[in-house]
View 1 (tube, rainbow, N blue to C red):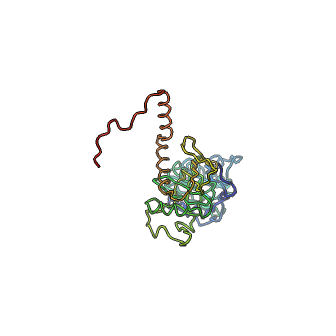
View 2: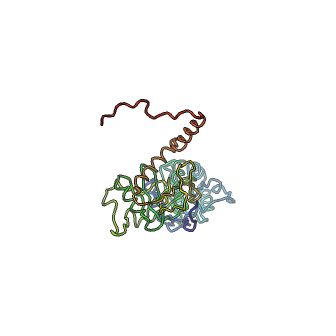
View 3: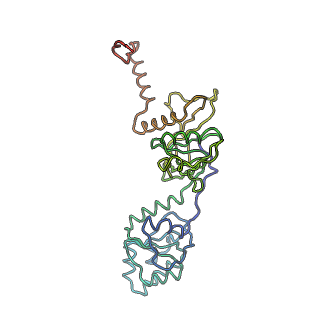
Length: 336
C-alpha cells in the first residue's frame, strides 16, 4: 500500500536571516562583519569548502552553497600578500554566495571584511572545528530541505512506539488518541500530522505550529491536551513506526488473523508496518493499540509470537500422532 504523493512538499530555499536565527544558539554562530546580505537565499543543502576557487580554479565552484572556511582556507589566505589576498577573495566574492562561515575561532582579515561588506556577503564565525560544524550544519540543512507530506490522522507515542491512526473522518481517531493519553501515553499531533523524511529510512512526525496539541472532539469541541494532562502527556516530535488504519468492520474483507505475513505502507519511499484494524461495538481499540506497540517492540528485539507458535505446531505435526502435552503436569485439588 502507498499513500498519495500529491501532498509532498519541499522547501525551495531558506533565507540567510532564517538560517542564522535558527542556528546561532545551537551552533554558536556569530556575525563577524556588517549585517549585510541577510535576504540572500540558500537553495542547496550541501556545504562547500572553497580551497581550489581561492587558488584560482573556478570551473567547479559551487558558489550557491554555504562556503565553509576552515584552517586550510584561512592559512592559505594568511600566506598571501595583501594584494594577492584581495585578488583571491575578489575572484569568489563576485559570485552570488549566500554566506561564509569561518571555523576554529579563526578571524577574517580586514580586507576580507571590507570585501564581504562591499559584495553584501555575511560572514559568520564559530569556535567549532570544521568537521564538527559541517556535520551539524549538514544535518540542519538536510532537515530543512527534506521532503514532507501532510496526512490526516492522530499520532501517539505508545510505550515509545510512534503510532499513526488513520481512517475516514469521524471514525474515532481523536477519541482513541485521547484514551491513550488518559492511560499515560503521549500525544504528538492530532488531525494534521506532518511527516518529514530524515535520512533514508526514517520518518519524523510532528504537528503544526498553529494547532500544536489542541484536539477536536465531536460533541465537545476543542480541548488543550497539554493544559488538561500536563507536559508529560505531549511530545513535539516522534519517529513514525506503525500505521494503524481504523475502519468499520466489513465481513467481506479478509483481515489478518495470524500475523505471519507483515503488511507495509510506503510513505515518501519509506516502508512502515501497516495494520488494518476493524472496529465493532465493544472492541477496546485503546488496549489493542497498546498490544500493537508491545508486539512491535518484541519483533524489534527478535521475538515474533506468530512465528514461535507456527514452529511449535510444525514440531508437533512432525511427531505424528503423539498426544499433546498438557500445560500442567499434575492437577492438585482445587478447594476454592
